[in-house]
Structure formats: structure tokens, C-alpha cells
Image: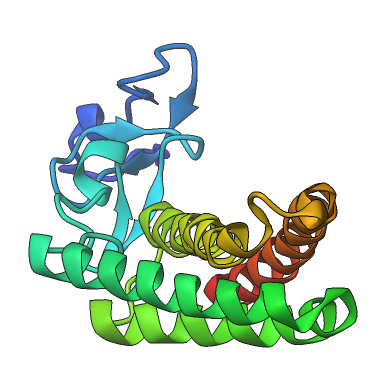
Length: 186
């Protein structure tokens, strides 16, 4: 008796090689296009293994945003970032350091709600960029509010102190808020 099964196709048992890596022997085929794939190229699909081209969705619904979602997210991130930045600068170092992560988490949550809880690098860039741009706007408003009081007076030397205080407070707040926002987006 032979080890071959009667009526079996000998091509079925022939060695297969990955279509992307011809030097790798495999026994796995893509569940969609039926090309041989090695374990380095294989992805777990909804009904088995898939190759890289069949396994990757055309549009990822968790990371793609419509223009409306992107615009609303940018508006909320910039607005909340400006309000949070203005409050963070006026609070001082200690409170900015303590409350900055909560403000960043709040901003992140607000932007996520507006965009439909999207994920990914675009969302992180949107939230973190909104916080940074908002703090820059808030620092500009803060300096402009106090600039008129010091111009032409003997206290003009105090402007240097104002600039360093605003910049240092803004820096502490930005770092703390970005840490809080990033922890919410992971």
C-alpha cells in the first residue's frame, strides 16, 4: 500500500512559496485571494488568514474623519485650549501643574465627543495641536491685557517679569495638559 491517497491531486501537496517572499515555504493561503502567504505576511481576518492587501480595510472607520468632524474637532480643540490656557496661565505654576492634566483630559474628551470618538494619529494631532495653539492665543491675550498698563510708565521694567512669568506658566500648563490629553487618547 502506498502512502498516497487514491484519487488525490499531487499538485495539492506541492510546496507553496509566499508570493511576497519567494524564499519562504508555506502552507497558508489568503482566505480571500487564495495567494500563498508566509506567517510574516499573514493577518488575521474576519474568517481566517489574509494577505496584507486583502486584510487591510480600504477606509478605517475608527480613524477617518469627515470634513465636518474635523472642523468641529478643530474648533472645539482650539476654543477649549484657549480657555484652558488662559485659566492655566493665571493659576500659577503649582495649580497649572496639578490641574493641567485634568484640563487636558477634559479637552480630549470634548474633542472626542464632537468627532464621534475617533482614534489615531490625526486625533492626537488635533487635540495636542489645539492645546498648544490655544495656549499661544491665551498667552498673547494675557500679555496684551497687561501691556497697556505698563507702556510709558516706570513699571515698564516689569514687562520682562510679566513675559517670563507668562511663558513659564504657559510652558508648565502646556506640558501638564498635553500629558493629560495624551493619556486619554491612548
